[in-house]
Image 1 (cartoon, rainbow, N blue to C red):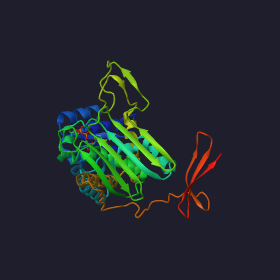
Image 2 (cartoon, protein in one colour; image 1 turned 90 degrees about the vertical axis):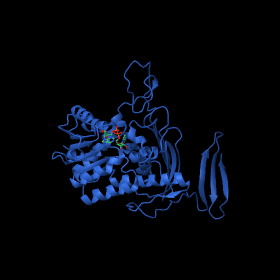
Image 3 (spheres, rainbow, N blue to C red; image 1 turned 45 degrees about the vertical axis):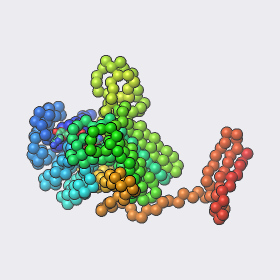
Image 4 (cartoon, helix red, strand yellow; image 1 turned 120 degrees about the horizontal axis):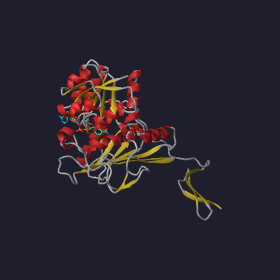
Length: 397
Ligand SMILES: NC(=O)c1ccc[n+]([C@@H]2O[C@H](COP(=O)([O-])OP(=O)(O)OC[C@H]3O[C@@H](n4cnc5c(N)ncnc54)[C@H](O)[C@@H]3O)[C@@H](O)[C@H]2O)c1
């Protein structure tokens, strides 16, 4: 059994608590910290926490706490991590790890020199669909990954601090792009270095200083391309979609809208349909089990098992740092309008991975370009002569 301190009792703190203490779990939130007494007490009552406080350090240092879960606004992650190191408490931090790579690197260095367990709570790589898809890619089901696209768009976040560039550290690139980059890395290979980024970003709708819409391409050292599409101005709910293209196959995942569960209602039921749903009447796309569909259950399972076994979880602060470094390059590129290098002072993956050969041997003299069965019954073979480079076609009737 793990005894947890939850820092933050807001939107994600409650999702996490539902997951951690749901389904007769043995793990327990024993202490909660948040800013206001009233909401902290309410959380403590709802989740039967023995201890609550509006003093962050008191919750972290509480003698019964083994593990701290940081679910605070982005500008408070670093201070919370510092206190976990001071009190030598295992720590898990929600996304994004830092507001930028420098902040993330300081957090990484702190936990590693304190020698404490560190987990990065990137839930979307733990959804049942992602877990299955990533495993299939690892087993070679789609061959060499050429392109991985991840899209997360919604009508905008639910609390004031997200909209303040100082507290949040950025707009939708940081808030949503962090999920997309880690999904793309998981398909392309987390040991493959992201090398440069080209990004378009704009503030198209909202009266804010940060970007509310962005699209970016991330080049990886092995020739694969990652793509992310993020927005705080999308209308219609929470759009979470991934596409992965490989030499031997394709994966399309729709995680939230149109998941195979569609419902019509005149609006006489409850108000809550699913995260960021914009309507509670008409044709709706409910989500059967959000905690599971968003990956929280599998994520905490991995974190807790890893901590108990004394090993690293699948997602660590190091991953959070790499994600921040990619997003820093995206912000820079949006300004300079150029491909910007990903600055990784600490790279722990493979170095110098070149593009695999894409040549398919047909016979001693030819490479195969394409094979096609036509609607008129002829099989066509497009071949390239190895010596002359000439492209020819052979038709087999
Ligand atoms: N899918 C995900 O992984 C996911 C989803 C949403 C949010 N998040 C992350 O979780 C963190 C918290 O986001 P949230 O949506 O729960 O926010 P929220 O506004 O709903 O909750 C913030 C919590 O922090 C507490 N807090 C303490 N000091 C504060 C201060 N100075 N200003 C504001 N709040 C303060 C508040 O009391 C509240 O309990 C952020 O880092 C965010 O990026 C992750």
